[in-house]
Amino acid sequence: MKKQVVLYKKLSAPLMARLHEQAQVTLIDNLNAEGLKLLREALPSAHGLLGASLKLDAELLDLAPHLKAIASVSVGVDNYDIDYLNRRQILLSNTPDVLTETTADTGFALILATARRLVELANLVRAGQWSRNIGPAHFGSDVHGKTLGIIGMGRIGEALAQRGHFGFGMPILYHSHSAKPAVEQRFNAQYRSLSDLLQQADFVCLTLPLTAETEGLIGAEQFALMRPESIFINISRGKVVDETALIEALRQGQIRAAGLDVFEREPLAHDSPLLQLNNVVATPHIGSATHETREAMARCAVDNLLAALAGERPANLVNGQAWKAH
Ligand code: 8YV
Image (tube, rainbow, N blue to C red; front, side, top):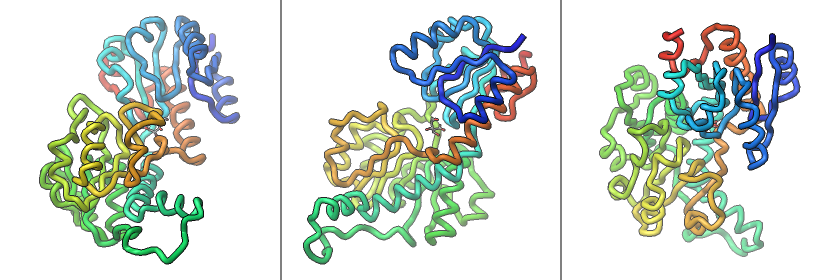
């Protein structure tokens, strides 16, 4: 008897074919009101779920008594209740590694775009306002040789450090819950307390997961420690930052600019004050959003799901405690 798999993220034809060979597949390719209704109707018979960007809480998963595995097409897992999944021995997997380089590229794209005012000045050209040689009023800031401060030295933080050190000759400072000797050796990176990093870095980049510990980590007190010429980059999760405090820091000139790929609420409201500020580059959560990487993530999620449904430990199991209980 084939297992019942519910997809709430569209997959490529090869991956769909692979899943159909081994499971009974229900695809919900739009999580609008109708899609959520279809999802709720499909959950009672589901053995496996695959998708991303949906808060799968107890209220929803209580509708799925036969659920054995969830394969998230993401590295972040803040939208899952791990304790609930452990209690129900539901295996949650994610897709680390395959997205590391692409997400670090996005981080560096934001560093460069924000420092050199790329979006603002490209729009000036597009609006036909390039009437004379660019002068000091439109100058940006150098990136090469400046100090790169990374908060959260995991896979993506390390890839960002690699780009800064080898690509742009940037001294690397980092703050993490533990020292990273290999990173210090490879990139001549130096550990700093959070407050020291904020005071010393020219670019402050967030690459840490959203957890109860990191939610609201960067607020008014932290922005006040940064320097007026420093630039803030967030490619982690919006809720790690007090967005109201960020807006105020930008308005008051406490920091020079911000490059943001994630926000407290997504999609970002079109009337957000962030979008009224010329010194903000805002992108729609495109960290891993390339054809190649999203296909690799989906392939990894399918591998994880099929392994779990076959009774094997998924390669990228998030909640090992649920496996121990097997
Ligand atoms: C995706 C991400 O945009 O992997 C993550 O945690 O935030 C991004 O890679 C998102 O999860 C949807 O797949």
